[in-house]
Amino acid sequence: MTHPLSKHRARIDEIDRDLMRLFGERFEIVREVGHLKADENMNLKLFQKARVEEVLNNVTKLAREYNLSEERFRHIFIQLIDYAHEIEGHIKEDRL
Image (cartoon, rainbow, N blue to C red):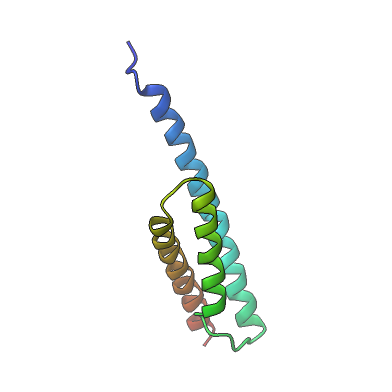
């Protein structure tokens, strides 16, 4: 006999796989951006305040649209942005 929650758990697992695939795609683009910045010798700071605020404002709107916690998802995206900065920083260091 299957557990009454099996169907829901399987769907959550499927969504988690999709999220991880999307995170992988997102950070592959971050790596490409990091390499472009390094290849073009762009003197852009890793932390671009205007871009960070743009991303966080977009996330806040989307959280509201999907009836999710704005504060929680801003925090999650701050972590994602920090990771992106870390990746770009390693790429920049490797080019020095």
